[in-house]
Length: 501
RNA sequence: GGCCCCAUCGUCUAGUCUGGCCCAGGACACCGGGUUUUCAUCCCGGCAACAGGGGUUCGAAUCCCCUUGGGGUCACCA
Image 1 (tube, rainbow, N blue to C red):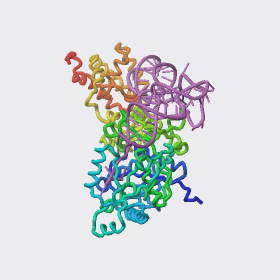
Image 2 (image 1 turned 180 degrees about the horizontal axis):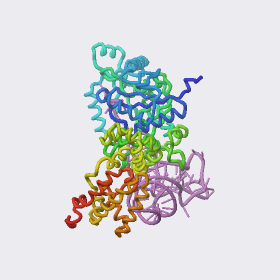
Image 3 (image 1 turned 90 degrees about the vertical axis):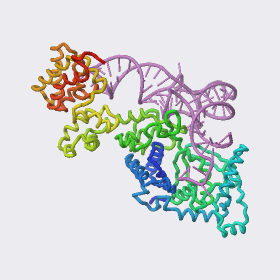
Image 4 (image 1 turned 30 degrees about the vertical axis):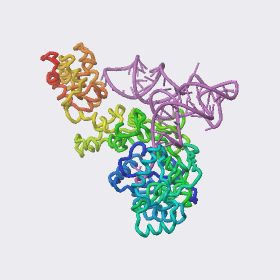
């Protein structure tokens, strides 16, 4: 029932030479959303013609990253499709046939110029402040001459013969961009070793895979006229283009590792929820209106449009990711988060695998307490550690609270005695009542009582509400840590030793 | 350097195509206040932008030109 000639087909075409970075992920996302919105097909193609730099590990990392984000592709590696193969390295014969066709039609020609001559030429042109262009010396070689040199085994590359006039890119985002053909040199389509070059491979693939819309980074804009010329010479339909502005790192510089994590994998490892990442990515360069900031995947599919993409480059801002991370942590159910955090606790060696099931209710309670204060899953692991092992270190502010009034050590021991009787893991409020009573009896403020207590229990100066923490920590650990308070205070330089250092 | 793209709060952006509703709206960050034993959440409030200069017009963030600034690209890499 679907007319295949009108079905939207888009592609994301990474080269597996490194991880999936933020910019690539955003491009993939826009392609994915456009395809879903249009009821089209999202193709994943691996551009691995650079055998030197391509690795299977990098490709796997890219696939993992896309799966983490839920950007499932309809055709491509591991899922197949009827426009395969989906690896450029497996499509080389096709490219050679295309080059032969170009040669035959006269759209391309053999160039026998040596690299030395080309280097020389480049040097001269640069010295004369001229445009650096191949001078087309081999363009008008006679057929006999060419045949003879081929016969003789002279090495040659194949160049595309660029014609007069101008080439127009009608870009969905940038509008009408005109390039004078004078600016385009007779570019190489096939190397001396017979392998073909990127621009030809892309055109061959986009055409072979019947790609209708090419949504990619603006760094490809100047490649586009060359590709259009190639499509025409090949008699293939030219796809519609949409070039999105690049993402910059802080300081407007090109995105690089210097700007902190730019690899999607790193955020995945830190345990940012995919929905947070999706929102972070999509809003960098796209907006729906002047109100909505948060979008579910379904809403994105429904509301996404190329019209909403801005023409100017965005700088990525980690504060926003953090905010979204926390937002989505609060949106998820405690049960979900526990499912997600459990394996991380096991991996961190805090929780025996078995206990992930047997102590499920307990885990959920601690996750519930951290949920609104963290941005990602690994922060949960970090902040929940004290439930599993007694603190051995006390962060500076915590240590300070303990040193402030060393007498509080006794108060904490006294509180342990109270709790011995009244420990109630279902009633933090009741325990808090006891603490208030003690605070009054000893004329010590709640703050001066609670902060040291928190420090001794958690090793930190901040935590979820103290008595909730105690309820989850359990009687045994609470008693032990409270009773060790005087000792700990002493070891931190408080008490008898005076206020040295 | 040639060619190409871009230009609204610190950041992401709405508004630009279809001039007036904009002495420019939202969000993040930041600052102040409330709640509170801490942190976080939450709630109130605040700071903060049309790069500059010329036009066109009754009227310009919006249209045109120039300048400046930023970015991309110029490979037998992708």
